[in-house]
Image (tube, rainbow, N blue to C red; front, side, top):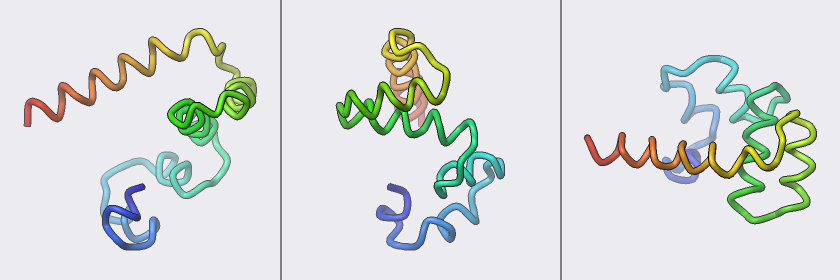
Length: 84
């Protein structure tokens, strides 16, 4: 949703960010390992359990491992934002 927040195309929004090409590619919809995980995250956040299950299978990640990993990531991001 970076493009919507900045009101510009995703390509332009990502151009200025110091992130790897692989991350940029995933965010632009190109198929790579990170995109597979991103699809899983988006499906999980939308509670689209069928898509989540499909994305988990494609990513090769057991579904039952995802909730604690997701929770830890949210906690980490919250701590980063709280300390700014």
